[in-house]
Length: 604
Image (cartoon, rainbow, N blue to C red):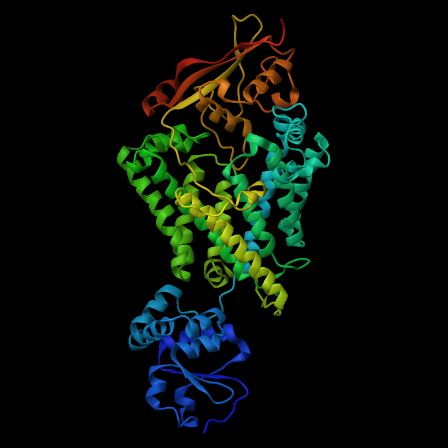
């Protein structure tokens, strides 16, 4: 007769490497709730259980003496609620899982080798304390870059003397839709629509970024960073309409729940990261990468026929000089590069959800692609933010093996005490965010599908769709802005970073983003100022000599007084060849295409 026990006992085969590995993993999960023992030592205590049963499957002896085996024993030991419900209530689930268990038990040598290959031989508990610590510091640096980069140009872009004044923008919103604007255009700028508020939001973002880097009360710091950046993106209009702006908001929002609820996080006593929000951040990385590959195949013929990189390096908004040299490589190299890119964006993202070693390989592939993009183009903080998300694919054990001991601090993870209502809240928020992001992701992949309307979340820009480089531009139109006092002699306004002088090499500006230079690239693609709503405001600012706008340019060719006339012409720019560069020293060649904006004057 079975004797009652104070704690369930899971009995396993100690001669099996596969069993020993997973028993060690389960010990980390169950703690003191379950005891473990090899049948070679305790089988004599349970004469009612045949020796053959011990040899073929694990046995769980409950407190009342009841004996469970196979899949049921594992699920009861791990206390996996939803799988237990499926096991007992979902038709066919019990039969299928028990058949899978028997198959694995009969081929344990093979699955033992597979386990070592996928997870390695280390049986230490998998934690992500250092990964979270590193991710939050890098995120703090990215926020710092974003706020400071915007701070030095915000007044010229959306200040009261800027190209698109934020105060006038919100006034128009309030006039047209009234109080609905507070939801559709969420920003702290409503409280004080002045240049001082823009200054405060940028300065406050810089200060909070330093606090996040220092690890001081990270959740509340992240709330402030998210709110401040959302406020700026809302009033930034076209100048803050880039995918990395909303990517930073979504990653920053998830990080609020991922950060430790401590005055300052320290490795000596670090709360374990939330598994739910760890997976939501990985889900964000998956959506970002897979969608970027999907939209290329779905939207553009040059990606499908592998010729997109024939144009990309010279037609991207702000190339680098390395991009110039890469452009010179033969076409077969570019086609192979496109195939490799599709492999990274469409295949490797699935490794995000794979076991440790495959996940690490996936991380290397994703980071490698970002480094190549970073070298050949200026994409603000996008590459750094994507790499930061990739850091969450590496667990603490892998970091210990990758980093020298002097760089790897001692980690003492602490499990949060179980709080029922806290778990319910976290589960509710997790499920809601996952459903909302899945609906938006599904709508992007399956445009004909009728999915629920989730437009109410759009103003907060924290559950987004992504898809970089969906349409490849095959030519590079460039706008040249010129001023004159007599309409005979025209002097060119030089921009800081966008192509202009033919002998000026493509420069390095990332992670800073000169947002006017970027918008000039988009404006040129429109073909005429009539299709670019803000361009006339820019011309008017030059005619008035507004210092805030002129600071966005490399120099002011009319330092004494503004010109009487401004015009804009359109050129087709292209990279020169190596021989031409050696002979003439030019990085660019250009061909005149026409007038983008005719001569305009504010004075009669």
